[in-house]
Length: 236
Image (cartoon, rainbow, N blue to C red):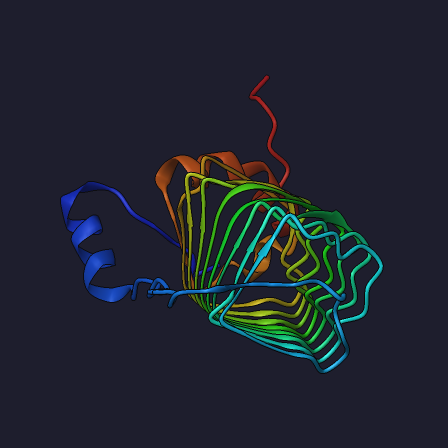
C-alpha cells in the first residue's frame, strides 16, 4: 500500500502536482463529414469521414473495421460485434446497447459522450487519449486492457472489471465507481481523488501507483483493514 498516496495540506498537494503526471485529453477536430448511407457494418470495413446518425447496428458484425474521423451519434449497438476494430480521431455520442463486443479493439484520440451501455467487452483493448464523459456503463470488462491518457468524467461505472489491466495516466473526475474490481491491476499515475464515489470490491491491495484523497482513505479504511487482517473493535 506504500504507493497509494493520500495527500493533505499545501505541501502534500504541491508534492502531488510535482510528482504525478496528468492524463492527456484527446483533441478531436472532425473534418466535414459525409452522411453514412446505410448497408450495415462489414467485417474489416473501412469507414473514413462519415457521420452515423441514429443507426441500428444491433447484432451486426463489424469485426476488424476501421473508423477514422467519424461521428457516431445515437446509434444502437446491442450485441454488435466490433472485435479488433479501430476507432481513431472519432466522437461517439449517445451510444446505447447491451453486450457490445469491442474486445482487443483500439481507441485512440476518441471521445465517448453520454453512453448508456451494459456488459461492454473491452478486454485486451488499447485505449490511448480517450475521454469518457457522462452516461452510465454497467459491467464494463477491461480485463487485461491497456489504458494510457484516459479520463473518466462525470460518468457512472457500475462494477467495472479492471482485472490484470495496465493503467497509466488515468484520471477519474466527478464520476462514480461502484464495486470496482482491481484484481491484478497495475497503476501508474492514476488519479482517483476526483471520484465522487469510490467503492472497491476486490484488489484494494493493488492501489500502489494511485493518488487518493484523505477522505477516500477514511472511506477505504474498513476494506484496507480487512485486507491486512486487522480487527477493528471499540474499546470495552
